[in-house]
Image (cartoon, rainbow, N blue to C red; front, side, top):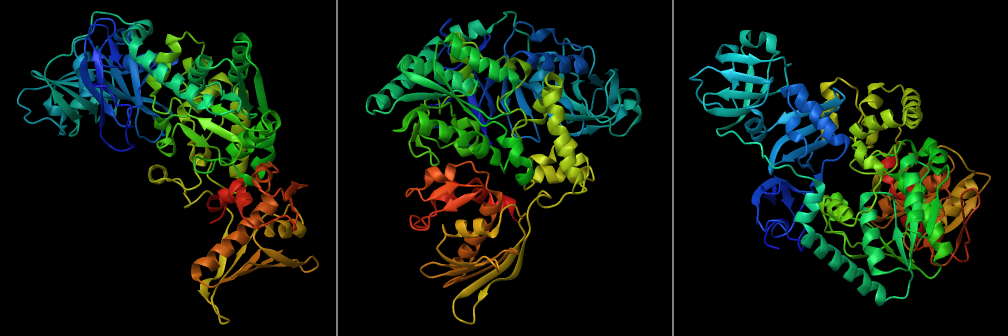
Length: 636
């Protein structure tokens, strides 16, 4: 491919620009080498990496219109024309706004103001200058160099208001058109020393294209590109499935990516099952959509139902976070493993809509992946190199009905209270489903109140992290919100000696981990058997664990003493004991560890029960356990 993104090498998650092509004649982005309607090779434009461009649809366009109307008194230029968004880094939602093949603005959700804001770019100022009825400042002649300067009110000749300090501005200086920001309200602008901040400077007006455009035209202009994407993905699926005997299945979440995969799989084979995981936290629209879609397509729909698993466990784990998504294992993986074990005892090949551009963690996914928690599931990722704009192009090309929530300004569709969703989307949820929003909001406020945490911790979304990133710590400091290093519901590990040389030889590690007591000490003993050979006293609640070269003592009060030949082995043995203590008390009984055990040594009975004769202490159960996986987030 000569233009656009080369599909053999995905953009890295780093600073920089990604190039696309725009057809001025047809008013649309070109995804392939040229426009299929007019054969134009297009005009290059750039967006910030990683360049996961997507169309602006439904209420999203209404949000943009309201902002342009609010700040510049004009929005008609968006009518019957295509707008694309490109997600970039920010505190919450931040999107570059692409119009006519130019980045004209940045759409942001301001967590402090709890509202959308608009940053006008130079090309936006060039476009709006002839038509804006407010948000315009005309400067006197002779202001000198402009870019990056803060100009005083005496340099202002004319003001088209009203506007507030901080609002975006179009700044006119002779023949120059600039993007800027107000440093003061419009009614006092001429009387202050810092009146207008100038960002970028240009000259020519950017004319509004006369030709209107539609998403149908977008698909027509990119048909050959879409067909090429489909052909390769279908061929990949057929090739792998043809060389393997396992039955095919499709992971269908109700989102756009799994819908695109349905279109591909339905062309690669007619023999497959659809799998939907009902986490118990799905939007009502998603539940209806998945059911109706499967019925309309006359497809078998297998439902893995988590029931009340989230609400049963949130009291022990606390709210999930971006860096502490325990809910995914409990509410998704656990019911999914049970479903696959029941319906596909010999395994299944599952097509999933994972894309490399969705996140850094998925940036290196391959076409074939193995599910580490479900040994008999092989995952195919046929759209791993697609961009969001490719996905939507394919959905429209095939005329498939999509989840109506995408028209309500949701970028992604998942659990309604997911910590990874945007605060702007949470506001939309409050409007669409005040009952769902209210239940979770009330739970969060009660959770915060129990620890005496500032109410703003909930209102501004700080609950979404276990370990707070710099951007949130800066925001808390600006707003004078008390901020611990980690979220307050983290268990504390008190080191008695740390790791130190032992008089008897080797090294020792000693500390106390205070864990909420939910089960008796026999469950601690059981889990310790997965670490090594155990001797214990139920009366005194002490267990001694021995491995080939290390020993471990665990007491019912949370004291842990580990001894190993090196500091590293002593610390690893201590951590194994701490994880076992946590697993015994915080076990969700999800059953994932049972399916990961190669010797079938585990069963569940109000926690983990270990068959000592079968257990080889291989540690695979701990690797699969959500409690052990998030040890560093549960304990500080």
